[in-house]
Length: 487
Ligand code: GLN
Image (cartoon, rainbow, N blue to C red; front, top):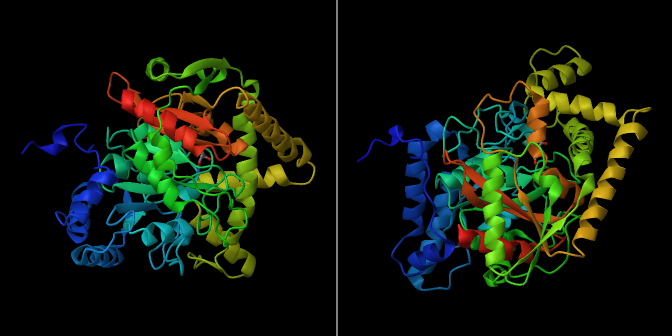
């Protein structure tokens, strides 16, 4: 046995495909209960170093796996995700399991219900192993803002996994789950997927119910899957997408068969390449890897078209105004009364609010609440918040014009590969600029996929972001399959 702690890449292991797992379970060669137990054994061994799981839901997982085994033993038809071991970002609520959203302020909170995405996964047969670490209230790009310590990147444990859904990306990269759920407000699925070398999906805003997602910025928040294989990410999106009476903003548009759509060759698709995403600040090795990916798409029969998205440079400021404004309102509910933590120090009602919030929230969350409150305050509203909303509209229109000419747009997901833990924590602005390529699609409401696309010389994964118009997920998956096949 090689000593696994010796190798920097020893934590990386690719999960099997859903199709392979299904074959093993339906043929009786693998029992869902044994599979779940083997994942728990692996978690016990690797999690102390990676800090991916915050809590485990063993009892529920083993009961669900036993149900699947009983069906298989009877020869009954198995649900589509039968026995698939999955992890859930801790910003999504699961009944009876602690939900922290990476914050101390939710200490002791036990949600009384399942979020819609989790309920749908379980109805489809998935086995939920536990809850995954993330930046506090999903605010961050490195997972270093978690109150429970940073997640380590399985590719290189000295580096961040990206954020805010860092645990969700790292769990798949280290095979501590076959697939996971995360949330993406400004890049929190796509960026960690790219840093960890896995597939991450940003569904169209409204495609997946937000019921049971602890809100950060409601007009931007989305729930989406991570997987090791593009087709599996497509299958998972199909399982969680669709109308939900519990979320009035959830789209009633029919859910396509995304997995089948991803089987269609990408040949004939028109691919736009925006110059603004290849400008100053892009790491040379990331650029080279993405250019190779674009050449592979051309070789697969796509046509490549240079396009312009000139308002891209306004996206980071607009995003950080709108996201913080909405966060300042959403986080008002954490007051020491309704949920979790209450400061023992209080002698008055106002003091109880102030102390509870001061002791319960971390530094980044406080910074965002202050920024957002400022942007919304009388006298500044027009100059900041309204202006940001105008920029948002212009960005969305710019994308719509581009999608009249091309079927999909490809860019790097992040300007640089995974950075070292601690490297950017002293400079919030440098951290915010990590989101430069992802916040545009967030503001526009369009969909996308981050797919692994080569690596740097040091072996750090590079992700290609594939953007498609509203409800154009099938197209994004087709392109992603072509990139994956070329890799
Ligand atoms: N990194 C971005 C932020 O800190 C995006 C986070 C997210 O998508 N939840 O706001």
